[in-house]
Length: 76
Ligand SMILES: [Zn+2]
Image (tube, helix red, strand yellow):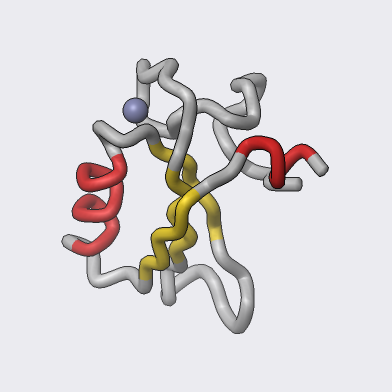
């Protein structure tokens, strides 16, 4: 289960604003000024926006982990 992604949005949709593509990547990230220890935020991304979102976070020097996202796995 993944929480905290766009209120009301389907759980497997890209986190990029206005994008409705099915997510195939998950991006786990931290804001070191807010998050401590093992608290990671998770965004989902389609193929087109994974680079945009990763660079958005990278530009802020946030720790970022990108992994492939499997909808079936997330549902189980
Ligand atoms: Zn997208």
